[in-house]
Length: 89
Length: 153
Image (cartoon, rainbow over all chains, first blue to last red; front, side, top):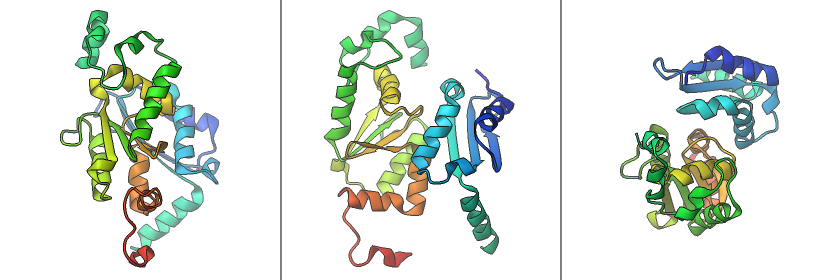
């Protein structure tokens, strides 16, 4: 069952403050395969496992309908550091 | 295709091979796994230092995420005798139950000494950051590198 990018985005934005959000449809059309990249203050002080569980919980219904789901979660500080590193390289 | 067949016929479910879970557990409610099922999965994750629930087998993975996870465990040098894998595609009940057990919606799933570590994204991230190596060393799965392990960074 296809899930729209907009629905995913709304579900996440409803629950946590978002610094940066990328939702990539990797399904080539069927809408069942998404990769998301979330940068949020809400992840501060949480382990990666806890962050992923948090997102899994927010998107529980949607993920159950998907074929594949992948995520990356950073705090704004980590994201800045990553960008700085990328620029320097 | 397997899934479709299972949905189509309940008769088929009875004859499915269930390497980990006994056929009797097929009758349990789908949403919440029984204490019995939970105990069996707990025994399975405790049976070997590293346990991987995946789609397919290490030699023939049937999903890109499972393949990547197998490759990472291989790169880390996890010895074969310390790794046990379960193919959830061969066991419809396990495929559902493992998600309830760990409260994790996707497969693959990696356990180290009975503790859930994560799925493909987390294993890949930990591999890249060096955390996975540290964890496997601390848990006695792989030997620490001779001399100062930190010297390589």
